[in-house]
Structure formats: structure tokens, C-alpha cells
Length: 170
Ligand SMILES: [Zn+2]
Image (tube, rainbow, N blue to C red; front, top):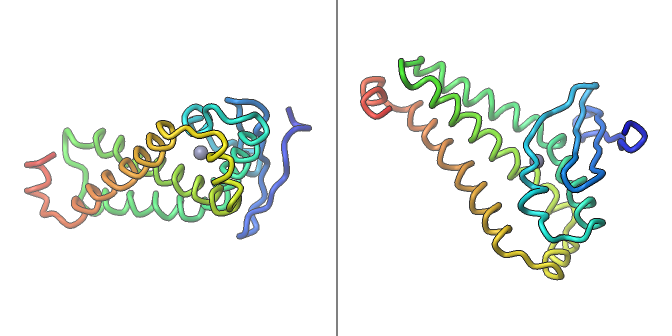
């Protein structure tokens, strides 16, 4: 597979390798370390697209993960900061970790796809105009936006709540 990996360089200088060779398989590697993420985009948003368009948009999306990595890192730091600020209360730890992971992954998926959308420009709209799949598009954009916003709002609330009311609710 190594010969099919494309070398890329992010705007902040970090180099990586990206492979998007078939409908499910994709890889983003930074410094030899793979950045794992579920193939949500391939399964949902690209459903029904011709192979060439699918691979082109998938490549841009995977590059988007690398390009937005500093923001994803800052977001993870923000989530950890809020959790530490309020402390960990019994019974809520796993819920917070789970919600934190969902919030983080959803926001990163959303920002990576926004990167692909901006980079592809009018081509992005044309591809989906020629191959309409409104259900998949609504599922992805609606679902990811909700998953990105709601858990983050909860974290923000936790960060501003008195600890007593936090344990009463969660
Ligand atoms: Zn992704």
C-alpha cells in the first residue's frame, strides 16, 4: 500500500501521508503514526458517488483532518480543561469521557469536511448535484452538527455550574 500513499504537508509544516484507495479504506499517517477515525464519511456522505469523485473528496477530507489538527488538539485540551476544572464525580466519569470523545470526533469530522467543501469549491456542489443523496447529506450535516454542538454545550455548562448542581443533574 505504501506506493499508493500520497505525501502531504500541512499549512503549519507538519508532513503526513494519505491513502484513499477504495470505498472503505483510508489512512492518515503523521510521522509514521496513524490517526485513527471511523469511516463515517465513506459509509454515509459518499454513498452513491462515482469512484473518482468519491476518492477525490475523500482525499480532501483526510487532508482536512491534518490541516485542522491544531484546532482539534486545542479543542481536546479545552474539553480536558473543563473536566479537570470541575473535578471528576463518581458515576459521571464515563459519561463525560464518552461525551467528550463524541464531541471531539464530531467537530473534527465536521471541520475536515468543511475543509473539503471549501477546497473543492463549486466542484463539491456539482458532484452532489449530479449524484443527489439528500438523506445521507442531511444525516451527516445534521447529525454531526448536533453531535458537535450538544456535547460541547454540556461541557461548557459543566464548566460554569456549581459542583452541587452538576452532581444533581449528572
Ligand atoms: Zn474524517
